Image (cartoon, rainbow, N blue to C red; front, top):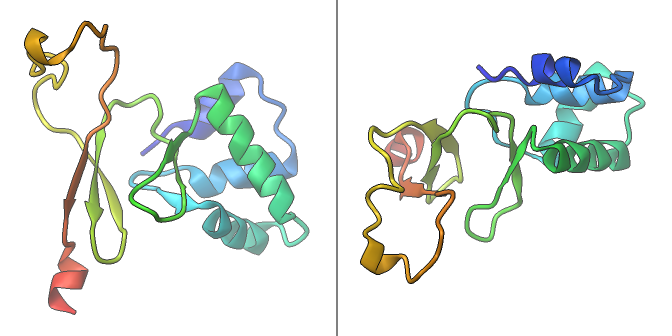
Length: 138
């Protein structure tokens, strides 16, 4: 489970009702919602929240480094609250479902010097693709 709400409180982020609802909607494990999905869930909790407020709040959370913006293929961007827990993603090529995965080892160490081309590599983003169980049985 992500600790998004706790991290935001520790930072002293001004927790308006709208911001709190967006953070609550995002908080959890394997959460990778689009902005429209965040808005739809937020409206259930706070009917007066606007789409613009949701988009602005998501932008702030990404800028703060508290939420990751995940883009897979040509699908809508998704928002991942597990920004402080290193992980990769497993994506269904059919429905777009995303799961966080934590393979063993260090992918930075697996990149040989001959393949770094002089780069100082600081981060790795890895996406595994396949078909999820729901799509296999459909």
